[in-house]
Image (cartoon, rainbow, N blue to C red):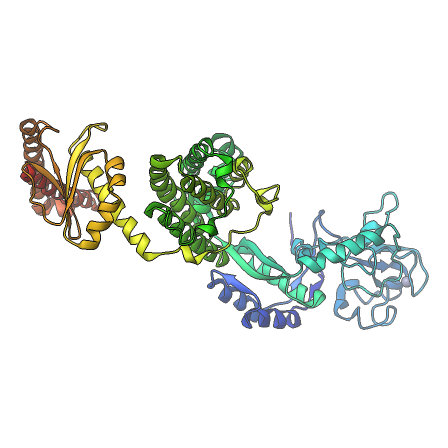
Length: 593
Ligand SMILES: [Zn+2]
């Protein structure tokens, strides 16, 4: 039969500690990210209770309290654990006869001289050890070497340090510890308080709050300035990942399959501040594909680089009339990415930073600048910009993808003396390169090229077939931007003859795209078999219209609406909308023929 048994415990009086810890957050010395956790923290502080720190388990730091059998036997009325709150104020032997608080085992009872002394068999609550972490890890307390350095005699359980016990006189001085302690003191000074604590919401009280309380008590300062509370990792069905449920993903397997940078990038990019992460193995493809893209782009840059060509700094380019629109644009975009990235990191929106540099490298640098650079790869300006933009992008990406960025960076020519990307400085902002005008001009060019590519795709025009294109640019500014950069349009959209004019009539049998007040015509005669294409589109249209009739019939049927499951009804509604969109685009294409 098992029966519960009442026993005395050691407690810490928390009220006075909580007052200061409460104040540190209220006065903004410590900030929570996301902010909503501040309330949770303050709620704990304002409803604080005394803390029972003794545990009846095997493992842990043992309670540094010793009992003299002799004294206790002489005073059997009192239980040894009954007066913890008074032990510090009163001299041993008066109120607390037989109770000795000491870092190490006393040789004899200071009161009666007996050597029959026993240590309390309880250990400290694990969080009691953990709340000392911000300073205990640096060897604190330094004045007296910790009792850990005291060699326990055979069979004796090693006593552990409990701070704030100045009464102990038996502490052994270890001369070997002196030098170490000076170094550790310097480290503590450097690292305490630290910038940021990253942890989970379920230990805001158990760990975060207690570190604040004890830090203020012993170090007279907060242990950290920012507290970043991360989300919970869940599987793609939303269930919390846990070993016992067996729904975890082993990071080692992910690393073997996708690479460690891919693991790191993928998790960071999908983890928004304050939100849970829904993780499935496919998510790691984002990081792997990005790593491959970056690697291939870097290979291209390195292969085409003449090392002498790049010994020039970007700042010499400000206002250089030899810069092309694409050159100016990629520099403008780089420095905007740098600004956004830095701001995101500083406000602990790390996923935003990851996604921003991903967008820049993939969709601006690789998709556009690299393609355009291929047209003039022997030009010195092109080589310098390719190399410098890549190098600065690597520095931004490095904290998120440390291995691949170092690997590429080591292969890049560089005039500055750093041995590793890890210790290079953060790229400095050069605002003079940021230009909204350049952005919008290049944006127009990109939209036009994209529109022509889309026309080619929707008419199934073979990839290597050159087409003629007519662009009606009603606005003078648009006309001049497109004319000046016609070579980009011609090359990137595979155009034979490009005709840009303020007045153009739509040629017969033309595919049409419209960007604001600019119209793009792609004559299809000779490119596709008009009659065959017409027949194909009409057949497809007939099929869609027939299906639309069925879906609309279903949706008019009250029985279907009321009886079918909600998601089935929604699916039918969605299908109706997508058929309608397809029908209208088919009709538009048909009218071009
Ligand atoms: Zn005694």
